[in-house]
Length: 64
Image (cartoon, rainbow, N blue to C red; front, top):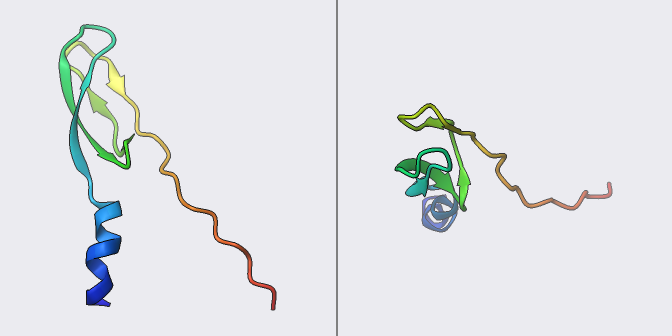
């Protein structure tokens, strides 16, 4: 459904965010969805920002 795509796509769109490296203090650009890192990203100093599991809303089971 193309009409609903705009609403749903907004929550899946990756956002480029800057995070501060805890090892060297430099800013590193990481891709996030809803504040969670999508893929592993390495800083120049070698520190790796690990990808985080995405939160998916629980769907209630349907009784048949």
